[in-house]
Length: 298
Image (cartoon, rainbow, N blue to C red):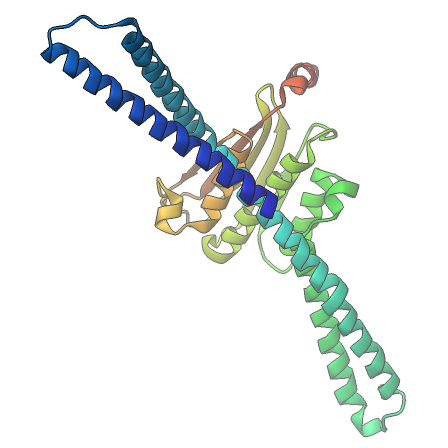
C-alpha cells in the first residue's frame, strides 16, 4: 500500500511542478512582451526561446492531462475490481477456514454428546445437528460465491452451470446455458468478470424480476467473448448513469466491462423482460485465433 501511495504522491508533485512552471513561463513571457510593446522595441532571441519553452510546456501539460483523463476510467475500474476481488477472496478464506472449521468442530462435539444423551433429549440433539448442517452448508455456499475456486479447475462453462444449478434449485425458473464452442484459453480475469456479471444478473432476477425463463449464452466472436443474458421478468427502466441512480448491480457490471475496454448493453422495459449483452475484446495476440475459430465453427 505504501509504495503505491508514494508513487501517486510523486506523480502528483511532478504534475504540479509542470503546471506551475508552465504558468510562470507564460506570465514571464506575457510581461516581457508587454514591456517591449510599450517601449516600441524589437523582440530579442532570448524572449523568443522563452515563448517557445512556454508553448512546449503548455502542450506537454495538456497532453499529459488528456492522457490521464483518457486512461482514468479504465484504470480506476481495474483497481477497484482488483480490490474487490482481493477482499472477497479474503472473506471467503475467513468463512471457509475459520467459521467453517468452528462449525465442523461444534458438529463433532454435538455428535460426541449425543451418544451420551438420554433418549428424551435425542430429538433436540437431532434438531441442533440439522441446524449446524444447514449453517455449514450456507457458509460453504457464501464462500463459493465470494471466491469461485472452481473457475481454475472446471472452467468457465462448468462453473456457471454449477452456480446456476445451486442458485436456481429452489426456484421455479426454467433456465438454459448455451455454449456451442469451447471456452478453453479464456483469460482468468475475463472469466471472473463473466462469472460475476452472470452472478449479479441472476441475483437481480430472483429478487426483482419474477421471471419464469432465463437464457444465458456464451459465444466466441471475432470481436471478443460475447455474453448474453435474457429473462422474461417484469423488466425495468435502466438509468443512463447507474451509479448516480443507485443501481449498484448495473454499476458493477459496467465497471467490469470497462476494465477490459469492452461494451455493455442493457435493454429492458417494464413488462418486457431484460436483456444484458456484454462483449469482452480479445487481446491483440489472440484476435487472429478467435477469428479462425469463429470461421471454423460457422
